[in-house]
Image 1: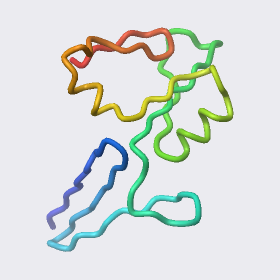
Image 2: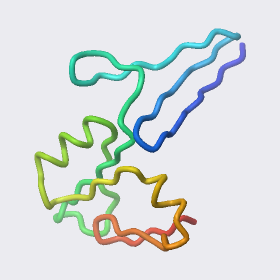
Image 3: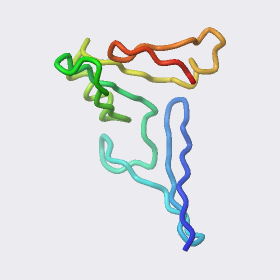
Image 4: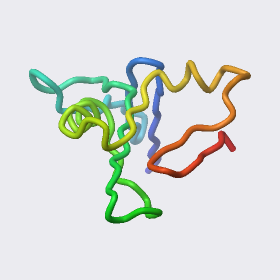
Length: 103
């Protein structure tokens, strides 16, 4: 039995497929209006001030946008990340008081 997973991480939208014994199936995701075959390439890191220095909660896609809108100013929303990563000016980013480099 051969299995595999493929992820197309796009600048705006992403998609995922599963392969098992030569059969390919696209993943579906809950979204506004039902099931979708793509999800928004968006990440949201919640800032829980009571747990400073610990790993933040991460949400993706439409859930990331909903979480960000529900807690304005209390987390970090990242979108179009591939556009920034390609820039020579990108050195690091800060997420919930932690600094991250590409490495």
